[in-house]
Amino acid sequence: MLTFRRLTSLPVLIGMLVLVTALVAGPLREFDRSLHGFWSDELTPRWTDFLDQVPNAVAGQAVCLPILLAVAFTLAWKHRTWRPILIAGAVEAGFYGVVGGLKIVLARTSPKADDVSGRFFNGGAAEHGWYGMTYPSGHAAEAILIYGAAAYLIVIYSHPDSRVRRRLGWVLALITVNAVAVAYYLGYHWPSDLIGGMLTGAIVLRAVIDADQWLLRRRTRALWERVLRSREAAAVRPRPVSVTRPAPAPRPVRPRTPVGAGHRQHDREPELVP
Image (cartoon, rainbow, N blue to C red; front, top):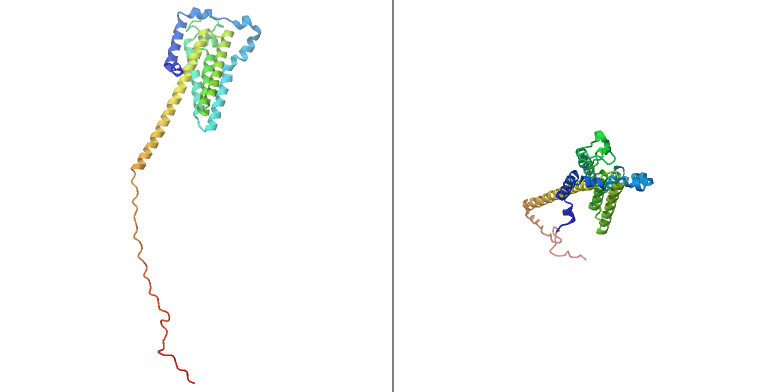
């Protein structure tokens, strides 16, 4: 039976990203370009700046990273552990290493660049700057990766009930939909950039969670084995032999001296002389 965990496992997510990338690089590139449009400039030009500075900024590093760090440092201080901070550092490193690395390697131009062909390996940071590294979308990846990591830390340390977990899931879904919809409406990305960004963010998040859970199981197993070894050593250890000391000899009882002993006794009482 397919479950959410299996559908979001690393092999499935990686396979979906490879499939989307291959389709966009070949047969679906023209269809991908046909779905694009600068909808905000055409329909709501007065709202373009607001959409860019407020809703679109929710999934940016200036907003999501401080939220993740606040959650990580608060939980680290409360539980006296470095684990939340290490998870936050791994998430941020994964974002720049995986998402940023794919942007540089694939080098796809943005719709706002001079080259609007949407081809891979046709852009680059040196020639087009940020507009030469559009695939996968960084905002779409951050919406799932950064906010998902914050939700993961809250769940594993606060142990909320199912109702709170459901609300966290809805908040994460709302942030992701906002990031994708606003970026598409503003025309900053090709539609496939947003799909690739969500998949890449989910891949990095799943990798960090799986690594954290593996380390936790390994640490728990090592601690349990140490406890078992200490118990076995205590059971095999010989008990000290108790030496019974002989009871002390009874002290000699001195014979009681009869009353009057040592005094001179008379055979008869002296006669009284009248």
